[in-house]
Image (cartoon, rainbow, N blue to C red):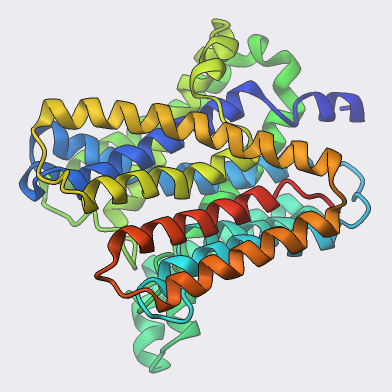
Length: 388
């Protein structure tokens, strides 16, 4: 495919919609745990919705890989590594606000793992055989987590970095172990290559490819149902249970098929206007929605009636999407009118102020803490609009 076509599909409407779907999953999941009675989050329709929302990181990590897969075959741009290191550093720094508010110095959460994934995808993209390396990472990660992990953990008396690589048990301050979470950006990279090569003729191959995805949907549906019927754990915090992983493949396959139909039936532009998110806005929505939910929780919006909860989630989603788009818009406007160094120094100074407030504010001052954490993370997301 020629470079002009690569550029054309680098900002796919369907990819922006997928970011929006992932953001909605995330908002529903976080709002459920913060604002609903705990019993409702594990039972009935709200329990099901909360569980579906827990697949938000799966979609976000997949999207990270797709973005790099779409660049496969393109020449490495000037300052390629500087931009990757910059993005990774900003995202890891934004992550630390979640730990500083608890009085902890360092950790790895959602934004930090996206930053780590960017670094890994950046390495794969410039390798001689990116597809092979992506597949090797997938198979080795699954092998470590679900087949050799427990044996190696005992054999090596593993701790720290080894446990993080194996993903066999949770670690303090680590939400996302290497195995098996790294498989999702790798899957995304492979799918991004497929999109790059086939986007222009997607309407001709739709039936064939939906049948391919059925090869994942049917067996993963059956296995997921079997694991659920046998009361297997679907836990994913700290360590990912095999049942959750199987269910995640089902969710990914269904979402991709839905996006195919959105493309085929020309709903892309319509849906993008409502729930589409570009790159920076899809990251900015993380602190924005969580800040809104936390403020509501602080002022007493807890154990809500289901109908009130639905109304509040719709409102949070609406405000979050608008504000996230605005953050990216402000960032791009600043980049056009201010020198890069001025934006960076001003932004980092304000971030440092937020960090100081976060670190020295007691948990009793919950509102101040939420505002400082949210503002610091949003400022860092705004700085992601800088390109070197």
